[in-house]
Length: 229
Image (cartoon, rainbow, N blue to C red):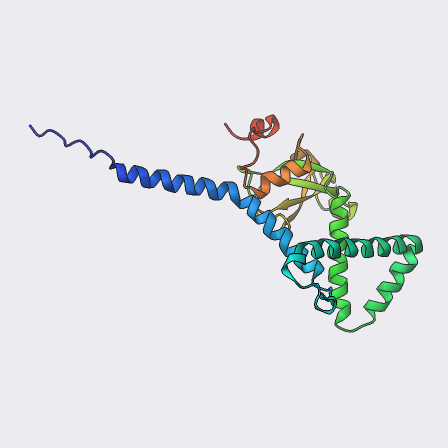
């Protein structure tokens, strides 16, 4: 009778290697957000303060580096404050004058229009562009995705979307971001009766999307009840 040979016990050196590897990996995970934040802040600080001619004033020594950068940053913020105050004081007249000037310059006007649209998109997001967080069937009826309602669909579109009785359905415009880059995604039109409204803040839902579902510790009851058992 052949007795099966038991598997060899793991070697201590292998255990030590795994322990070292796991601790290094844990250290990387812990330090990455901190290091990335410092790097991005330093990059933006250098970018914002690069316009100041340090050499002309003899302020390019290393010991003055960060103090000078912070002072230039404060000066830059002061300049933007003055520009903002002037633009608010003159209102739409200043905006129209700037638009007229840049839109009459060939090539430059295309760049200006693109950046203006991007600025308006950022401004709309800061004013709660997304009204609600919803759960929708995407890309088919057996899977679900988290999306954001941006507005009620215009009647010019809903008159082509009919219910069982041939009547126009009430629909909503939905933006579904992609993971991990939420600035791109899909614009979708859904019948209002087919979306599941979630009691989640927009920022929490966005974090959930960016992290591919890793940041939310507990699944909200609405999502858990909607998912197939």
